Length: 131
Image (tube, rainbow, N blue to C red):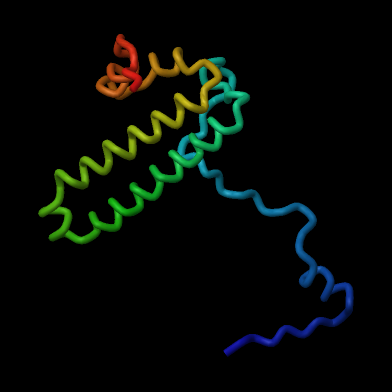
């Protein structure tokens, strides 16, 4: 049943009917907001890399949501605990890659990646084989 609202004056109607002049703040796509006072974490000027990092953050959030949904079921979480842990590691990897891509100094950002195995893979020596 809908509630009927009666207004006493046109001014009261306008206050309730008109959307506020300032829009509500949007929820950021990024999962982690980084301090911008650090030059390594300052955002890059490349818009494409920023968009790719935003998409990686979005994928991280989606994976985290799927894992949390599966973990709510006790039977599923017991049976698939290693898989859920793998999903968590993949999500963290996506988040760290997003931080590196978003950085204006990606080489320095790689040295600050907290996941040591990912940092080692990103810093390994050797060229990329081209066909």
